[in-house]
Image (cartoon, rainbow, N blue to C red; front, top):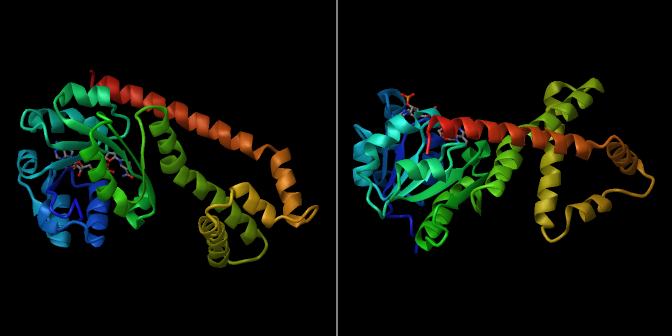
Amino acid sequence: MNLVQHLKIGFIGAGNMTSVMIRRLLESSEVKAENIWVSNRTPGKLMKLKDQWNINAASDNEEVVDHTQILFLSVKPQDFSSAIEPIASLLQPDQIVASLLAGIDFGTLEKTLPHSRLVRVMPNTPSALGKGVIGYCLNDEGDEGANVIMEELLAPLGYVVAMEEGDMFDALTISCSSGTGFVLELMSYWQDWIEERGFSPEVAKKMTLETFLGATLMAQTESKVSLEELQQRVTSKKGVTAAGLDSMRELELERVLRLSFEKAWMRNQELSRLTNNANPK
Ligand SMILES: NC(=O)c1ccc[n+]([C@@H]2O[C@H](COP(=O)([O-])OP(=O)(O)OC[C@H]3O[C@@H](n4cnc5c(N)ncnc54)[C@H](OP(=O)(O)O)[C@@H]3O)[C@@H](O)[C@H]2O)c1
């Protein structure tokens, strides 16, 4: 039985992430447009979403609260207080409030929404293709009902991972959300090197994409085999691949990447501190 098929789902904020989520939910046929309610500060993006998907365009945030069982907060973190404080007293204790707001922790959410079933959700850009890594955590880990709903509702966005708030949630943000940007950085070096050897930019890009995609699909197909073992299978002793890998290890590529992850981690902590201080507990 599809649990979410009859669920009434709300979005406060009709921006990029709401648009991605609505598209994935409707294309997966798990959810019906008539069960989705959306509000926005100004009408432009909301009307576009309504025209495109035939969802319910609410005249204000209160209307979304009135009609829905789960409510996604999809405004920018700096708009949290102005968007949420006016509706806080309207929320019923059984409504689930799922915050997409990067950096706003449960401490801050609970200050404004002390009686709500709260969830933090971290999607990323490839979620638009159903290939994101989506982390979520609950303020009450014993809320099995919310757990089941989140697993089912988020599945069309990609690989869903439940975890506790804190280091693991931050690690997912760095490795998967920022990680998408890091992988693209590596891919651009690949493309440059190929281009410098005479290939056109189009061909060089395609060669790069297929190399990353091929390695990923191979690892996915051989899911029981470790990445190290797969690497050994494509590397003969003292061969060409081995020479390249030896150099990467001598030059400490791993150290460069780890340091970059740490830098991103520190910036994430700093932004989170600033955001939560701007919305004090
Ligand atoms: N985009 C991503 O890849 C991504 C990834 C992870 C997490 N997130 C999180 O998702 C949230 C949304 O991000 P986004 O990229 O979708 O932002 P966005 O495109 O800027 O959308 C935010 C929307 O919120 C609306 N809004 C602002 N105040 C409001 C209010 N009081 N009532 C109703 N609507 C209001 C804005 O309306 P106007 O049209 O009037 O400005 C805007 O359409 C953020 O908190 C972000 O941290 C995003």
